[in-house]
Length: 245
Image 1 (cartoon, helix red, strand yellow):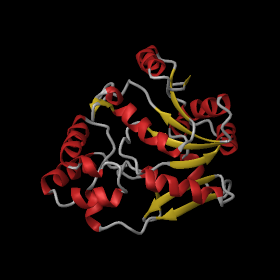
Image 2 (cartoon, rainbow, N blue to C red):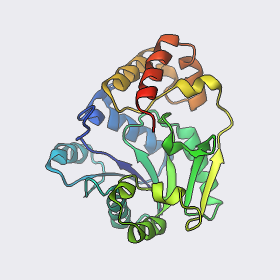
Image 3 (cartoon, one colour):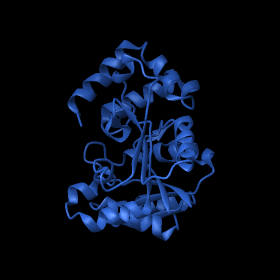
Image 4 (tube, rainbow, N blue to C red):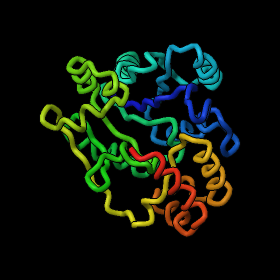
């Protein structure tokens, strides 16, 4: 069974409790989850056993959202635990700091994955998996068995922290397939929609106010509007330059 797992915690150092901050009349996390429900796939939030996340678990329980608690630093083990507990053999990995994820692209990714036989499936931009980009609107798909194999074969906690890094950088051991995005314009590279800093959050609020009718449109339609907003683009560009991956 394919399921969506959203990694989330409240202990962000740059923007604490960011996923519980308000956006469009709800929290960022609930805004994301309600959008993902349109895909009609089971959704689980993978959070930590850290006491700081008790508040998050209470919130999830109140809103009847399934969750799993695991190691804070070994995110790979947390994903394996969540997927195993909820009987997912394939995981759609979503980060909670991506409330404006492109549902149209994600649905297309899932449809394409079903026709493929691979361990890891993702969009790429300039031959780089989109998980490594600053766009903040794409997910990735990975088999549970590939995650388990990775967990057994590496000891480096840095690799385990980033979950799929040890898979898409190791094509000799894993069947990795990437679909190159070709719809982007040069200006789109200046757009950052992931939420990791107070400045990102300010930009998100601004996008909600100015471009509300485009929040559920494909990324390129929202990006077209943002690319005409030079003031907003410059703010995003500054954050991009200071957060190079």
